Length: 428
Image (cartoon, rainbow, N blue to C red; front, side):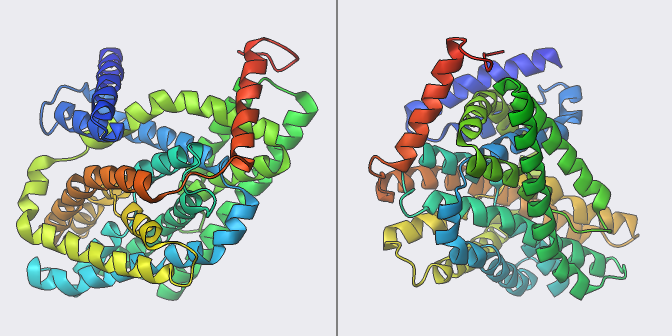
């Protein structure tokens, strides 16, 4: 496994550099590298690495969501609150309904099976979207209107929403007793419980940091460890109390940024360094989950279902932005930012097939759902990432010198301070 890890790091860095040289997002190169090295194409990866792939991807996703939390300011969230709320459920709902309507004709699924497929397709990929939004924030592109923050916040809640819908639909399909009202009520409960847990944990960390003043690297390790435990708690709470762990992770960064900017900038700077490795592992391992042969089985009919679902999602996204001060180009950017699919589809695309087999049902519809889910990754992750980068550079205005540049200056100042070894907070 150590050799596979070394290969992923070296080849991942090379793929990132090569794609950036041609002005393509580096993550596309890492995704394609993972596909090529994975078990469905080159079959070069050590099986031991594939066995821990799920845990590694979760940790990498936590790193980038923590960074996202440290970029969420209260003032920006207050400005984009209404739009973020609408974007968290309207586009996904319209995509689900569109897939439920067209998939019976194009794929031969029932309406309920099509709705399950729509729920799987309705999730935006945080692995693809969050890193790109953070890069725009760091370059101060679109930050004056809070556009990257809008996409960050809304896409995170969008995932909670569609996963709850997916669980309810699968339960109904395999004959489980499902209380639909309770399932739907679980969405706001999960959001509130997750956010509250993150805020309380963030305040607890602030007390510890002020009381004992640990080194910045130790602060990062403490927060990272607690965030991993939060994800585990979400699994323990399944079926008991709705809990959105990934929102809790982001809330930790949010409260620390609001209460103590110095700590936030120090921690964010170190998370940025960890992300260099985490990014390679996340995208190569996501790519390794993509079964090209299964995607091929979906064919043109599967591609048509995905495309029609994206059209419905785009219409819903545009409607959510009506009445805002965003220009047409900026609205198109938000529409495009809602395209990529990867993380959730890779995680639950095959779950309906397993549920059908466990219930002794015909697994044919599960094969179709898996094929379309995999095809959605192949079609939307690289093209969506490319479109976000290109369109964002064209339509997102760079904010003037002000709050964001000051924050970056403070971050650089803190980093330089620690590199010199001054004070108690010297580098590890």
